[in-house]
Image (tube, rainbow, N blue to C red):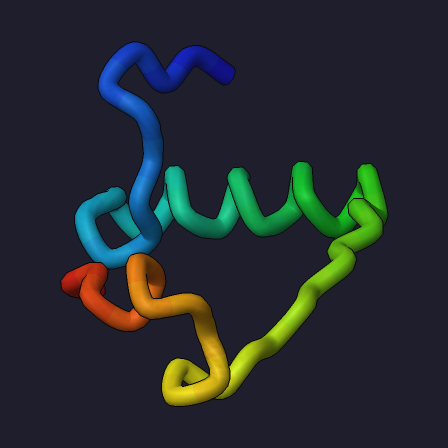
Length: 50
């Protein structure tokens, strides 16, 4: 599958979206996440606009 402009689920056609989801499911990626309350972050991080 070629996605020269990248992929974002909300912008993609439904057929493309389902194909990407199928590919992700077959690869079974591992996602590691760290969550931090923004008020506990460093000042430079707190100033970032999301």
